[in-house]
Amino acid sequence: MLRASPLPLAALLLLAGCGGNPGPGERAGRSVDRAAERTGGALGNAARETGAALDRAGNWVGERVDPGRR
Image (cartoon, rainbow, N blue to C red; front, side, top):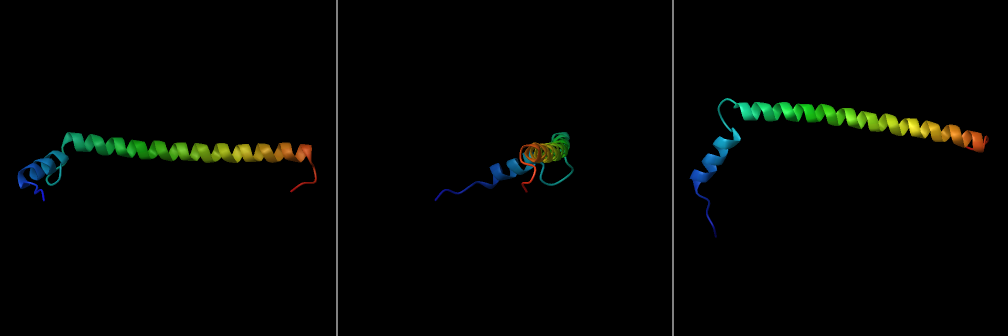
């Protein structure tokens, strides 16, 4: 079985910003994450609104084609 040396693990933890104050790279990464969440939320809202508008348009057309259906 392979054993991992603690030295590379410690180096990875330091590079990842674990412990201590966040470095500029970590702060920038968090900023990008927040922007992506906002953009994703906006895209989701736009998709929902577009779907609702298409549904309403389909209902309007369906009402014109077959007035008694539901």
